[in-house]
Length: 268
Ligand code: ADP
Ligand code: MG
Image 1 (spheres, rainbow, N blue to C red):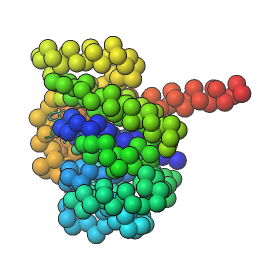
Image 2: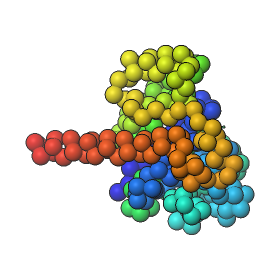
Image 3: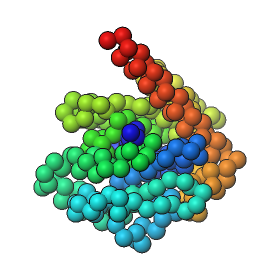
């Protein structure tokens, strides 16, 4: 059964999409079976994965709103990326409103993903920059939330609202939801603000902050215009190496979590 990660932060431009695409490719590079779900109407994860967001027959919109079977909507990504994609485009803007009138509106993504969870080791969901019904669907479907945080001005602003939302969803809709980790992105060690933000995060959240830091790296910004994850575009770049390191850290953390669960069960 797969682990579902939502990459969420209602601030825009913090590295959600960059992290979703590159983590998907990095997990796939370790031979894990990975599905990336784009649930942002901007469709940046779709185009950044090398898929034309206006050419796919079905997108996540059709799955959420029109009950198109998810198996029919999932597409492959160009060779070298190694993961599957459930695409998004501007159609999804309408879904935010349409979902409000639907039955089990918070569970639409969860129920769709249920059909394919045995096929993947990891499912990553790239959220839009808001706490709307699409993000609620992602958090209701997820086991774990990755929160990308840009190590720059106002990084911590809005974090409380996100943590409150996660807390509410875990109490009401999805008891298995927890915070996988806070991910420092666009880190520039020459910038003292980057260091301040990083130190603040560690003092507030301790072990919840991933040890891996994603540096500011121009290759990460260039790769989407080539429709490729950075490990296909420039495998030796610092961006590529840091996302591979993050995939390793996530795999190790998950192993440790499973072992402690097993140990607890053995005690009972
Ligand atoms: P979000 O999905 O949170 O809105 P994006 O992943 O789209 O954020 O990133 C915002 C912008 O910053 C994009 O232009 C992206 O290419 C760039 N970017 C993201 N992470 C990095 C990084 N580590 N180094 C350099 N540029 C980055
Ligand atoms: Mg994005």
